[in-house]
Length: 154
Image 1 (cartoon, rainbow, N blue to C red):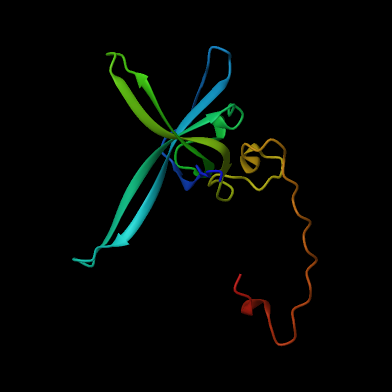
Image 2 (image 1 turned 60 degrees about the vertical axis):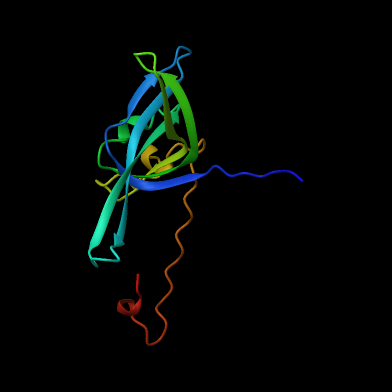
């Protein structure tokens, strides 16, 4: 029987700093940024609401085109995989780090908050290899008898 495993990460959060792009010796772009996600819960003993923020480092390969849009405070959707690696620091000590290697990054929010509604915008396409086609708008049907637009919850 074959063994299966899953390494999938999905984050929705806000950028903690502007993305920084550097290049490897073979001129491959490496873009790095951090994403803040929040968790909120009610303390069982005190009944008070508590909140904690988790900072996740993200690495995106070949993301030089989207990096200028990844600025501090913007809300993003990141899909990728966890990777743990080690390196030697300047003192020769081995350091271990875990980060998300992004496969897809999409800016969220409306105009001025992250993404832009323009179908040709790099922000709404994220890092997908081909632009997504926008679905055709459904023709607006007349409201059903006895139901007004104020009755529709969205």
